[in-house]
Image (cartoon, rainbow, N blue to C red):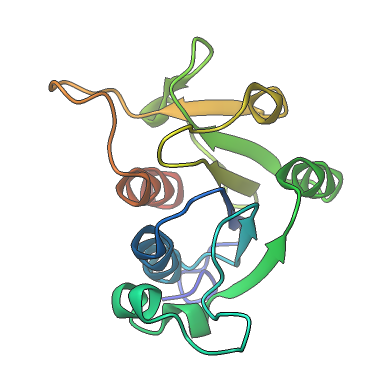
Length: 166
């Protein structure tokens, strides 16, 4: 399903910063395709769908089910520079992170013509303060159980579908 099929004019892109797990990256590709995202930026150590020889990475493609071929992607060395570029292009920067400045994701809405970059961080370290300072909003998913957070790919799915279909 693409944004155009749903009559949405908004543009949402994902910025994946230092996510190590091929399974998480594959899951994010599959969710991004399902949500009709425009593009995924793979930053820092985040692996690409193909290795340096151009061969598909089996752990990623097993989870993505071909979504890596349906969603445009770009490898970027610097998340910070990419965020600056996206801001210049009119994107609002929303990060997913637990922080003193974070707000519950369900208190955020976007309009039909919004341009949003949703930034996700490392499974273990999250996002750095320098990246969080560039955010227009820091979103978090309030947790009721004993665990402090959800898997990064699951959190991405919860928030991206909320933003697009609220």
